[in-house]
Image 1 (cartoon, helix red, strand yellow):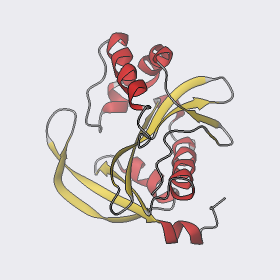
Image 2 (image 1 turned 180 degrees about the horizontal axis):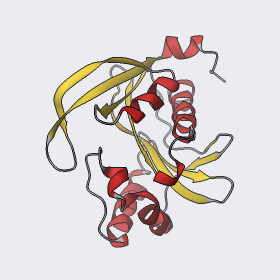
Image 3 (image 1 turned 180 degrees about the vertical axis):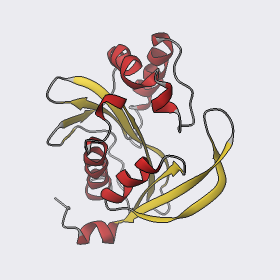
Image 4 (image 1 turned 90 degrees about the vertical axis):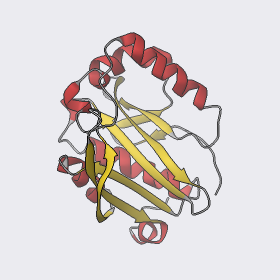
Length: 190
């Protein structure tokens, strides 16, 4: 395990980079204030851009830690900030990282989140030395599971009433993962 923190990643359509507080207006406008985007997440939509600024200030401070992996998804064509993808949990002893993500509704259904997830998997396996990358979703949000499957992850099962949604209600979550050896067989290691 070699923690190297959040470094820039380029994909065909995205520039993945660290967030700055200056990203707050676009983040607030594009997804943090949208109840449809946050519907299946654990946090409520931000009521004001001030809330988004406070979140980004905390995130910027976290970048000082080498085990922080949090990317701002910037749309290359316009430079617009359209989403986030990050390691939300992990275990260094077994070299496991859990990914979380969300993105502006305007960009849904175009394979963009899959593109970002594949790039982050590649980074975590090839550069940071993880052995397992996993993600989960509320079972009522099957579109998120499709993103995980398209990135090479396999569904492992459903954990009943394992998380609370942003209303505080217990929800079942589907768990997906990809292991280093499986990733290596996909010939994505660069």
